Image (cartoon, rainbow, N blue to C red; front, side, top):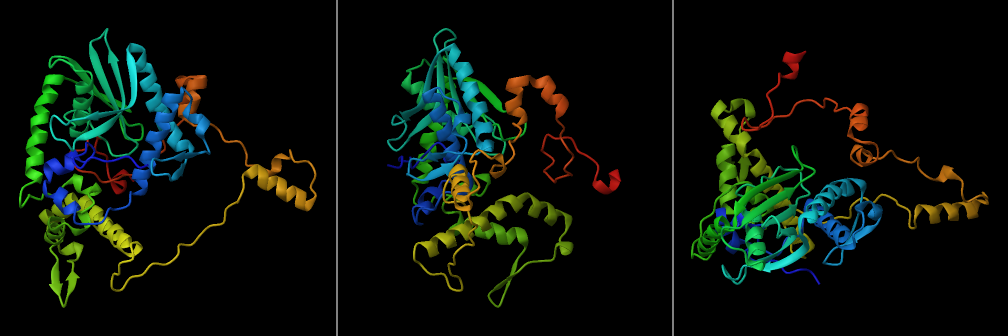
Length: 384
């Protein structure tokens, strides 16, 4: 049975605390299907859970399927394993300091009855007098643990389970191997500080229950089920693009006609607007899949690539039997063995040797906001 999700959940706290209106608006639309990235992240979490509970290695799941809570299956590839291994190794290392808890359910009913969740992992050390709450993130977008609303939510839940004193220290850790920078990042605070956050949650819930709750656009719109029908996002899109209506059509200005201030505004809003357009497309697809109609659009079958019905070995045997090719151990039917990834080889031969055999090729430049911490470089033309 699929796991229940809190109406005021930790993963969406950043959204509903900033945009109270998103709760009521989301209740007016049908449930939206999970994105491929979200499903992959769920599968990666499940792989980490299985490895930690079974005391096994993620590598043993290569080529197998992970069964998710809703019954669907997701294939495990090497990229997923490489990321989950970082998480599993860190949790096991920290578990030497105290007692380990995996996928622990908690309730924040002292804040609101609809607030509950599950911690990926936590370590409680009597010796250090510290509780560490660890959250695994499979995504690529950098997430800081400091003042992180989702992690503070998890920390409150774990502290409540262990009945910790307000002065007790609590370490909030994010393990995110696929993002830039350090894969493991932590922030140490106190239970008392997090209890102040509980007041913010109460105030936020009250705001969502208002008769006309406020809407506010931002990064949190990306995973909002109601993004496609959000009046604030639609208004923002038209304002930023300086669009005009003519005979029912939207006319966008040519880029070379925009002033520098307009360019800056469009560039800063581009990720949010692109996410909104993607949400509209996903919403429309879900409407058609649910049997509802959208004028001018229809569903068609995707092009399907052929794949073997059975495993490589079984297929090889079938072909050899059919063609009377004899020896079933012939290696020509299998792909050439692949070299392990640098992360995997480091465990076998050490970091120094791997570093001497690796390189980070120049893949060109990319445009980011000035607030990005990476150093500025010359343009390709200037470099040439």
